[in-house]
Image (cartoon, rainbow, N blue to C red):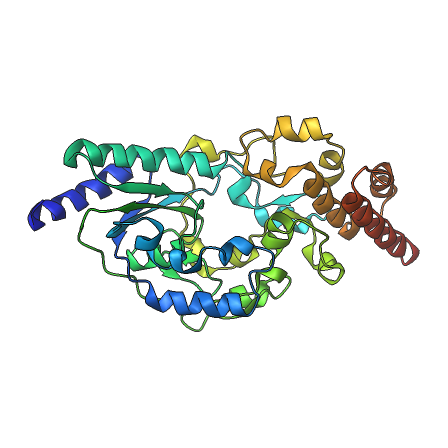
Length: 356
């Protein structure tokens, strides 16, 4: 294709993407050299914790053409996810007997939703240009998605390491299409964080150790989702009632005053997960867990870690006979991981009762 045709195609791709529900679409090149050094430094400090996959692919994460040979450009897309009818997150966090679940996980698993729309976008491109090499990614491979999105003009990396956009804040998913089409690239967005460090100050576990540096080993999202074993004892009291992920750094960000809510019904709240009670979901059997959370990203952690996380939250809840009874019912759980966290929670509840 000639250069003018490529410019028209790029405009069409963005238009098709918006018609598919994406808030915005951008195009980036493949030079991620500056980000590569930052990634290596992050890994060298061990900030990735048990996420071995972050280091397993060498330079493929920062060199798109090594991951998918022939890649010349990366088409990036944003998809808003904040459920419009979800309970006020601040109110849920303030209610220590309620379960706080990250807003992104209240609806349908984003992997499928995002992938299907990216695939539809590639189908539209193929219908125009014919055979071309491409690959779709939705948080499913070694991709530096925030860097690519930043380079394609979809926003800038905030001090909490998430992508920020002036019109949409940070409540959105990112997806990518690696392509061999030499499309014109978009200009990157400059940073607009200024001197603000609200996200650093609010982090319950102080996981944002410096602007743009996250120690995942302290991050509540990592602890409740990625970590497979016991949650460090010193961090358990800081988790509060957050049983799946954490949104504090986003909730406090001034740019999220301009955030848009989800337009796709896929991200509507399911199973009343925006306002559920800790004791109620702690009683779910494994079958109930799998059935109720079918199609949810939460199901990926499994019933055992679900119970582990809720046990910690119950330990942090106000002392009550009902909470003690719920914990005792799980005291003989078949999982050693669950039993250990239940015993910790019981001890914490007993200590609170003594000082009540």
